[in-house]
Each structure stands twice: as C-alpha cells, then as structure tokens.
Length: 310
Image 1 (cartoon, rainbow, N blue to C red):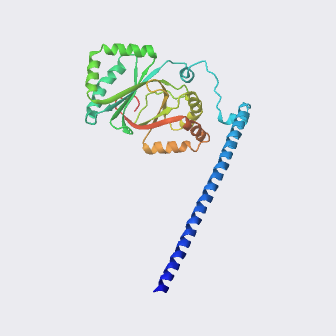
Image 2 (image 1 turned 120 degrees about the horizontal axis):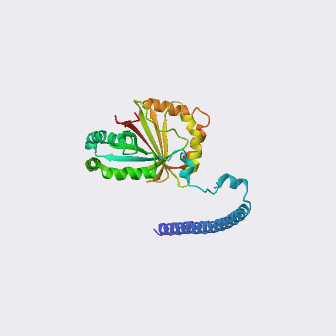
Image 3 (image 1 turned 90 degrees about the vertical axis):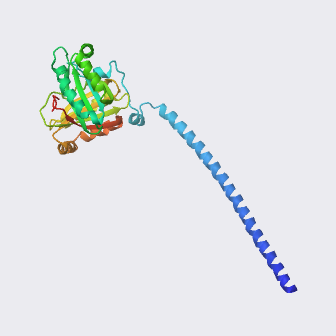
C-alpha cells in the first residue's frame, strides 16, 4: 500500500510538471506571436507611410505635368460651349417640337380606351384649326403592359404647342374626352422632345410593322458626346429602312433619348440588329456610348389603326 501511494504521488508530480511545461510553452508562443504581430504592424505602418508619401510625391509630379500621357488618357477635356446642346443637335431648318405621351391604362379599360382614342384623336389630327400632327399611336406589346404611347408633332415649336393647347381647352368635345379618358387611366406622363438633326424624319409608312421604342437615360453632360457618336453610327442602321426617328428631351425627364425603330416582326428585328455587328464601326459606337447610359428601356409596340405609322 505504501509503495502504491508513493507511485501515485510520483505520477501526480510528473503530470503537474508536464502540465506546467505545456502552459509555459503556450505562454512563450503567445508572447512570440504578439511580438511578431507588433513587428508586422510596424512594418505595415512604415510601408503605408511610404506608400502615402510616394503617392503624394507622384500626385505632385503628376499635377505639375498637365500634358502628360496619363492625363490625356483619363481626363476628358471639355471645350467651352457658347450654345445649348438643343441648338447644336436639333434640325436647323425646322423648329418642330414633339410631345410623347405615356398612358398606363387600367387593364379592364384598354379596349374602351383604344376605341375612344380612335374616335377623337383623328379629329384633332385632321382639323386645320389645330396645327399639330399625330405621328403615331401604339399599344405596348412587350415591356410596359397595358400602356398606350402617343407621339405628336408641333411644326411651329413652342408657340404652336401653346396655341393648340389653348384651343383644345375651348373644345367641349375634347374636354369630355379627357374626362372620360381620365377614368380609364392609372397614371400618365409626357415629355417635350426635339429631333436629332442626323436622324430620319418620322414620316407615315405603310404596314404591317412592329415598332421598338428604345429609351436611354443619359448621364448629365453627355448629350453632345452621344450625338457625336450616333451621327456616325446611324448610317449602319439604314439598310432595312428600320430607323424611324430619334429624339431628346427638353421638358420632363431630362437627358432622355428615344430611338424609334420599325421592323416587320420580331425575327426581322433580331436579324437586323445582329447584322449591324458585322459592319466595321458599329462596335465602336456601342463601346463609346454604353458608358454614357444610366438606364435604358425597350418597348415593342403595335400601332392602332389610326396611326400614320403602320
């Protein structure tokens, strides 16, 4: 018994010694790791300071070289303009103003809405007392559903628009039409547009066609750059007579561009768009214009039977 007690005591002392060694080793490892961490932090701080100093020196050197190749690559020089972009990009020979209307119709009222428009809109279009033209009127097929789009032209610009609106307010039939139409709508919005000088004139065309309205929300200050690129690019999209009209906003949501295209059907649209990529220069237009866009949208539209664009 005495011998067994001695062995147990010996084993306990050995276990305590091993445990003590383990704890001591763990403490030394922790201290060493902390020391290495502080050293690395010091090195990182020195490196960061050196990097900041280098960047500061580089920035100073860079700023002193205004004509350096790096600046020429990344800084776009803007020449001062003495005219608004509306005067630089729109047609000089005409003063036409366009109005585009987007009407979101209650789904159950779309048929009645179309019938009402077919009855009333041609009267305004054909009446010589109203110096305006209905360019086109459509229902969306793909994109915004249950939506109607109308495009009007005012050949005399803002004075003509004011004259037409003033006369229509005195037209009892038209005011009744507006009241009845209002009960069918969920929401509506419009924009006043100018036509790009390099685009086709939107003239009546026979059908049947489908129409695509591609709308682009540009970054402010990029309209001139957009126009310069599309003035070259539009020639790549004339082969199948698909280009109908190109417009940019003046009132409403600003820096908005609308491109209106006509195709025989969706398959024709796909083939026509793909063929543009086979023409040298089209890819360059896309490369330079895509960065100018904040948002874009596409609507496939079907014309009503009263639309001059069929």
